[in-house]
Image (tube, rainbow, N blue to C red; front, side):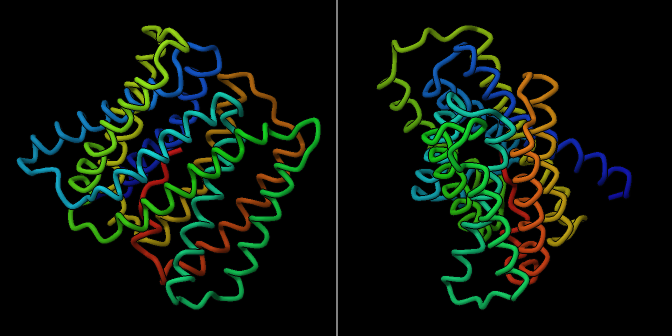
Length: 290
């Protein structure tokens, strides 16, 4: 793969990951759709797109598990519920920080000895995260922040489980197929709270089919060319892109607290990625869908 093509596909994929936060917030903030319906449509659309890709490849959705499907549903449901309460920029920072802390933490619990810089990085990221959610005029809604932390932890677990899959697209498709019925039940349980609009459903379809499923497929073709270390490092751009997009397209304010805590979080994560690249290379290359 040429350098230009790799750079172009990488940029497009990272933009898609960031767009997930913007699409979800754009649909839920004005009440165009309820979070449960958004989750169900997103997962169903993602499953459909991945099934279509596998059909073109003449392969089957396999390699996932019921447990992975459950964790995927938890990620998507908490993600949507959080974005009713918090902004896209803050949400992306919370999600990204929790994903990385979860992945590194679980890897350490499995017996991998952390490097000093890795420990320092985790503390810096957690300090930035703590500052971000401290009570104050610009602090995010506590329940929304907690839900996004749950979403990030779930995605971190999902990412670690997915690293052993031989066919990443097939495994993701299988997990999406498991998660979709759960999301449908979730939507039925919350039916009638908000009347979904065509715009809200359309944003959910784009989030599932394009900025989730399709971008995953592109990402998996790019990761081998990038290598584990660079694939991990470039994902630092995701919360930055989400924050910029939230300010430009959604009119969300960029407060000094968000800017400073975001800088601390990204610095800490950069240190953990730099020292953990050799320890969890495949986990680091799993996409972080914000």
